[in-house]
Length: 260
Image (tube, one colour):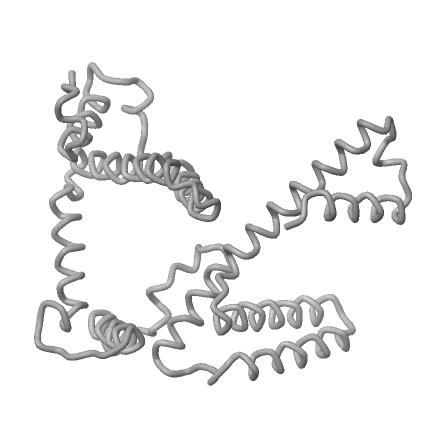
């Protein structure tokens, strides 16, 4: 049994997970694999993001603990299968951080964060080898919006970027016109994709995180729609039976009642 005196120690978490995976441990934990834990890892990542978006720092501390548990769990599964150990994870990340920060641990000189990011990409390209693409390191399994943001940010670090947001905003208008002119479903899908890609680029140039912005827009929509439902309950009316104009009027009430 873990002592309350060492609950703040990383080693305690490692030992707890090992106990859960032991033959006399937890049946559920013993059954887990790298694959079965995928959805839990993703869920914990999103809960961390939600805590950051809502600036709930107490919740963030708890959610980071849940995320750390996922990492330790994967490390334990790997150790049991002789794949790798926690020490390998720590060695790998420490080696990488030291190598990619020669301006801190070496003799390289940089003046700005932009120079740091530029050097970071050059060092990663060296690690990948001459035949690999700069984009190969971005997981294509990422949600499309996040993937678009990641590859555009990587291009920016290499100097392939608009000088300012004005050029991107102009491009947005051009892409919107092309979408309007599209005649077939295939063309509309392609042009809509191009417009989304450009919107992500514009967000980045304006210092907006498109993933976070869309999550916040989703939350605003959720709050306002729930507000509309409550108004309907208070007034004894069925939302489904309202006309579009009446629903829009309720939406206006929700916007006014909740603000931003």
